[in-house]
Length: 481
Image 1 (cartoon, rainbow, N blue to C red):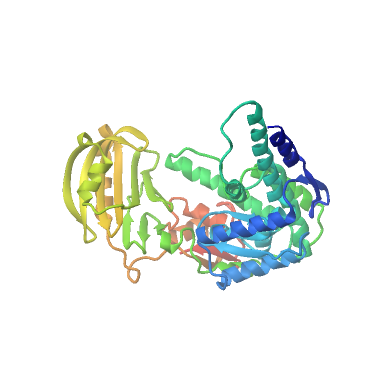
Image 2: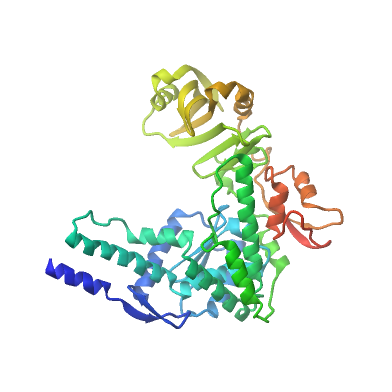
């Protein structure tokens, strides 16, 4: 025990290192070599897990071109930086130690100039140059060692888990208040050196604040619990505070630089908005999935949400729900047998055989416990495609079920095969020259409210504006069609 105690004390002894970005002295428990090795290992894992655009894709090439300009004038120009575009609708960007920077296509959709792209990449490069990952590692490691020391005197369960996994979660969700503000400052430092207008940092943060507010507005309108927005530049610190700090710093900057509004818009023209084609897409009141060869339509009062795990929907501000899941099967069985395993026998009031999209299916009415409800009436349809079970559920409180039965029947009857050449495609970014008499509401109407109930608001935020603001006639703007 004596030697173990001495070893723990040695581990706790910090190493003093000069921070490349701040030039101050940091107490860290990771050498630069270890830092670069960790980043390399995590990057391999992320490449296996994330849907990435090909390195030769024009958008990937463009993002890398801008990123390399910033990397060359950063405080760690000796590192080899790599820039990747994650092909999904998430509004986020993050950096791994050693210079691996990821930006999601969902965030790119909401940027409005090459300067704003430089603001995002400069911020993420700032996390790398200031060695924020190393600082976070030191905090986590010190905590784990502290727990081990405590166990010498008070027997406890040892801390378990992969440290790199803990760090990886931090990299994606963001760092602490001080480190996020510091990365904002470094973006302001790097941008003019690379030739970009540093005032784009504030305009970027303002767009993300509008997006945060719209996210809350949509959830409140649908009847969901409103939570703080998380993602790129999440509210640690609060976005308002970050905007104020950046604007105060920008007032002291007299540098001007490239904005490149039209060039950036041309770079994202034609790319998907939101979900990737392979993950299905919500278009207005409809959902389709080319890979699964199916589509559905929902009545106007329904709010749809597509995630990698499931398609969910609900009646706006009411307790009537829909969910479509896919589950991998572990053995061959009929849809009826699969359904009977899911629910208690006494809860199934009736069950019948069916045919869905040419596949054997089972349909049942259930009365019992359901998601979000202790007691509900539920229509469940299950069909099998090879080794996958498709599970479609619609439910409401038992005494309210009849009020929504017409909607449930309409949704079920709308299920049909998807034909790419004949049916509507996924929403894509497009460009439009603002004309006299245009408004966000008129453009939303022309698209048949392709982005749902708040299409006009989304189009405005996509262009860095409030729905009440209007661009100048002749200006190029982004739309979705």
